[in-house]
Length: 595
Figure (cartoon, rainbow, N blue to C red):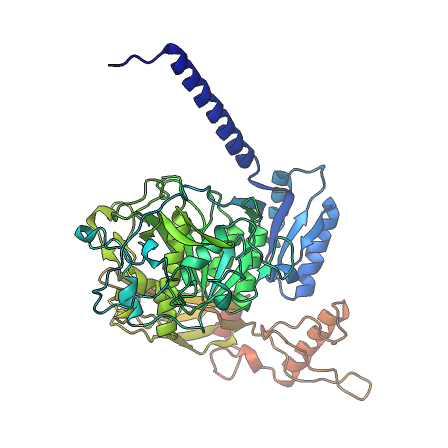
């Protein structure tokens, strides 16, 4: 055995220490800034009109000298603000200050998100497409041979280890009506292989209409999803014809924050994005981000992360949120094995997709990258193919179809919920086994409101789980539910059959109003009549009774007078809850319960 000199060992150890110090410094610098200095996201409860919320917010901000950075109009979410607190107060103190107010639903720091660091990028594997391809559509893009994730002939013993894209393209190559938002570092929308499929987009880093990619990450993801295909140029995209909406929320260093991310999501919704591709994440839970995702009609495809963690134990968000419209994606290699860097989780990761040596567009040219950041766009592209072929499918239906159609690999059972790797062909060649749906009658009225829910699901579900929005649930197929408090309630139905599930939600579907609704105009003692109360948001509450544009003492007084007048005109009126024709003991009990 050749002896290694002590001086060489010393130099190697020194080099290792130096590398560790530099890497540790980078990590320490990033980890030291887990949120934007001096910034707090405040979510106010729904306390009626926007005027009331603004009044409370102004009062709380003034008390500590906080300034509004992003208003609810800027964020696109009623009752939400991002504020800058004074230097004399810590972020932790400010969060507690806001949370202690009864009118605040929650408050949290404006958490920072970093793009995953580059894993590779030097791959050069070539996968020959071959000439004998019955039942397949092979594009003429010259670098298609480099895209093993789409078609891989080198590992036939493991059934190719790709997503069966040529077979899928024999059914559909995608629809230009489908929009995939790439929330990332921007996109090179002038790229020769992207320009024809790119929409204009927006830059939330600089707040302008130039979502230029000054990092490269977003452009690489966009090419995987929907590079212009069969144009004798460059590469193929999973969905040849779907449109890419560039949404820049990460700067050139790969840094963003929750406020920018939610503005990007709301913008994507307004622009009609069916699918939102999120090749980023972090290990800090954000109530704000989860709420926005939960309420979005879009399908979110999220990268599971690149640290090799079990994210059931160390959650990586947004991939690990329990939101029903999220698909969490790990990275597989050309042998159909989990990539060495990929996060995993039996509960938190849904499936795996190709994520090593992935060749795609980068600004001005092409290149290889590795990561779950690359795996997620494969799923986004397949979702676009499905949505184009089945436009009536909502986000949950598309998700269920993808997850029920994976290529099963027994060695993936221990690392993801489906135990499989993405397949593009199978979901296009079958119909969804389950699809949840329902209706309610009546959906609006005064308390007590008794509502009959009817299951309209397809696929012969075996069990049901209803949530009525007021904290109560039911396992019946067609339940009846009584609402006893005023408000607008979102209802969800989840159906189950043979290990599959489907989810349907109707937001603010049930509108329950207070029983005291003055409906009669009454004399104003001046020869005329007071105006009827105006309930613009149809919640049964009348704030600006005299219609002068603001709230004042005269409003509740006038409302009280109207109620008294209505009772005098019709003594029984709305208080005869049991319909007996008189006010009895049962009516009094019911009124007491409602109050």
